[in-house]
Each structure stands twice: as structure tokens, then as C-alpha cells.
Figure 1 (cartoon, rainbow, N blue to C red):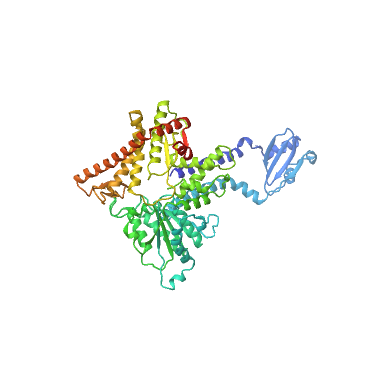
Figure 2 (cartoon, rainbow, N blue to C red; figure 1 turned 120 degrees about the vertical axis):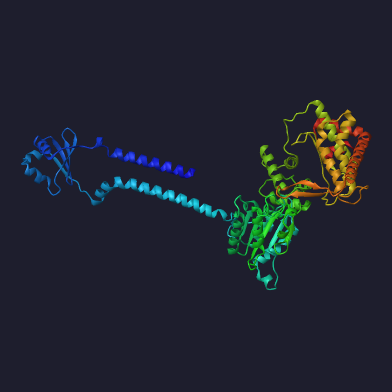
Length: 604
């Protein structure tokens, strides 16, 4: 409505401007004085006329004084006939310049009609434009239920992605090879009575390359690719989501064989009947339409649906049954070799110093996803540019790892002498206990330079990737977490808030040992508690207790027992190795940062 009013005002102002211009053009002030035939004859007889221009029946007369006047004669009468009728002597016209203007019919009609036609054209154009605006609004309203999916055709080679561009994920690519082969040669499967899976669900943590892998399938198969987010289906108007699903599959069937990629499908695919919106919720209608389109009465379409989610536990069972998403491809966090391959892909186009080894960066980034590794190299390039370097050095890569893990270095966070000493002993306690305990990961770096929310940090990670952890490793990790708190109490006879984060992590880990991992000797190999989620709200906010108050008390006692045992272990190491602790802390106060080689040299 605001746009219509704005257009109306603009057209009205243009119309007024043109009308004012035309009125000035035809202003009476600028028109010549009109005289009768008798006065014209008197002027001729007095020889006061210098020039006469004949334009049809109109006489444009220029006096010797320079004044311009007009007179009128009969249309069928010439000027000479007029002068003869009034017996004007020929010598009176000897010094008068006479000119006859040719008036075309086109100029005549334009001069007569244009002042009336131009406003009419403006008004007609304004009405047409307003009607077109209203029609466009109606069309947009009718297009509200159409799909917003973006199509990538095989001809679009600019952004084409193939399996060569996806590093790691070997098993996932092998699973998807059949999809590619089916899109290339469907008769190979149909001739044997085989049916390719209609839906493939890509499951994995954020940043592991689910969307990239789906694009690679389309690029490898050289097939049309429709991609849309699950949240784009749902609107506040009832039926819009289902209408968009129908429109999406209608377009896909026309382009078949093709791929439809639905990112974050858990936005519409959550379990039905668990929300607060009732059974006629808009999201549920959208999900029902997806179910029908994927496995309805039409079974002849060659449309493969690939969906991605990091929450497969909340999806509706009907969505995961055979005939719909009957193949699940899991993408884990990359291993050491995969991380090195991913770094090689993202290192293209970035100039590295000869001393940089991507294997070293891969070893220092356990638990990083593909997106994290891409961000890591990007941060390294930014750091190198900030230091006016032409190539990325080793220290840029190592510093970017800490920046991605912990946050940027807070140079403005200046500690006083007392706080700096407490932080140094706190981090020295973590590092010392981690170095002494046999099941703990080796210490790679100790620093009291603030990063992110941490006042100091101790980096430790294993020599190789591990997928299973033993009880002894967890117990040593608890001792390392509580070592900072124990060091403060042992050295300064007081404790600070610096161990707040350590205590949270230690308590959470100890509770998992009891309730999830079954590592409590008293309670035995058993899990406790069942987490439930309100699907409508989208997060875990409640836990169903499948045990009584007596067991709850025992769980608390076991958690406390794990923590106390770990705390005692840390205290004993700190008291026994007090000289080494002091040496580490003093070096940290002096240098602020210790790398692995420097740290190990202090303890030899």
C-alpha cells in the first residue's frame, strides 16, 4: 500500500510539472499583440512595417520599432488581393520583406491536439501503471505457495563440485557412488528389477561436509540439483509449506532424473504428535506432504532426495522407514589422514612458507571438522597479512589453531603481579599432573596469555586419534582438571574463581562416568536417567528419572567419590613434585608461554 501511494505522489508531481511548463509555454504575456485588418492597412500606408510572414490565414508582422504583432486575413484571400482591395499603393511595400511559411498538416494537428493529448497520455499511463502494480501484487500472492528451491543445472560448470573436491569421507563417497551410477545409467539397475534408494540421509556433526557431499553427487552425476532448506517450507499461513513441497517435487519430476537436497530437514521432519501446536500444525502438514511425495502412488519418478541433519534422533520414524530415507550415510569428524587431505584442499591458492607442514597442523587439530580446518587456514592467512608477510609461516598456523579453539588473544587483559602468579601456578599444576599421569595426553603448550574466556590454558592432545576411552584415562583426566584448584590451595592456602570452568567440566565428566558409561563399581554396568526433549522447543530441557531417591543419592555419592579420588591424586603429585611445579610457574611468569620442547626440558 505504501508503494502504491508513493507512485501516485510521483505521477501527480510529474503531471503538475508538465502542466506548469505547458502553461508557461502558452502564456498570454509571451503572445504578440493582435490587430485588425484596418489597423494593419494604416501601418502599411505609414510605412511602419519592416517584415510580413504569412502563415496560412495568419499574418505575423514585424514593425520598424521591433514590435511583433499579428493580424488575420481570409483563408481564401491572398495578401496582394487584400492590399489591392484596400487600394494600397505598390511603392508602400517596396522596403517590406515578405515571407510565406509552409504549414504541414502534421504540425497543424500537433499544434492543435498536443496540448490536450499530452495530459490524457499521462493520465492513461498512470492508470495502466497502477493496474499493473495491483496485478503484480496479486501474482505475488498467487506465487506465495511456490517453492523457493534453487536449481543448479549441469551446464553451470562454474560452481561444479565432484568427489575429487571432497577430501576424506571415503566410506560416505563409496555409499553415494551407487546414486551417481543410477543417475547416469538407470537401466543398469531397472533391468535387473533393482530399485535405487529414493532417499539418502546424511548424518553428521556440523561442518563435516554434508552439503558439500550432496553437491558433489550432483556434479559427479552431471544431473540437475535442487537445494532448499527445511525452514523455507514453513510459513505462518496454513498449507503454504505443503504447497511448496508439491511445487518442488513437480519441478523435480520435470527435470528427472535429478537430485533434491533438503538441508536441515529436522526443521520440518521432527516427530509428529509431540509439539504444542496440535495435530494440525503447519509443520506436520508439510512433513505429511513430504512423506506422500517420497513414497506415494507415483513410483516411476527418478527423483532422489538427499537430506542432511545433525539431529537424526528427533526425526519422525515414518521418514526413516524403507521406501523413503532408507539409506543413512554417517559422516564422522575427520581422522588424522583425512584432516591432512582436507587441509591440502583448502591450502590451494594460499602461499605457504617452505617450513610449513600440513601434517603438523593436522596432528594438532583432533576433533576439528572440515569447516573448522577451512577456518583455520583462513585465520592463518589473515594473521600473515596482518604482519605484512608474503607467505604463511608456521607460527601463523599454530596461532590460528589456538584462536579457533579458544578465541583471540586478549592483549588488553593485563593481570597484576598477584593474579599473574596465581594463574602461572594454576596452569603449571594442570601441566605437571598431565605430564606425570601415564594415561593422560601429552602436554603440547602451556600459556598464561588470556584467550577468549580463559585467563590461561594448557593444551594437550593425543599422538593419534582415539575412538574409545578407558576408565583409567577418564580418571587421569579428572585429576588433571582438578589440578589447578588443588595447586592454588596447596601453594597459596586459598582458592579463587579461576577454577570455575575446570570444576564444571570435572563434575559433568564424573556424572557421565556413573550415569552413562557404567563405570561405577558400586552401581555397576548400568545407565541412569532418560533424557527427553520437547520437540516443539527443539532442545533437551527435561530428564526422566527411571530410578528412585535411594539410587539418586548413591549416584551423587559415586560422583563425589570420583571427584575426591581425583583431587587426592592431584594433591599428591603436586606435593611430591613441588620443585618442578615452582620451576614451571616461575618460567611461565617470565616467558608467559611454554611450548612442548621447553616444557619437557624443564622436567628432565
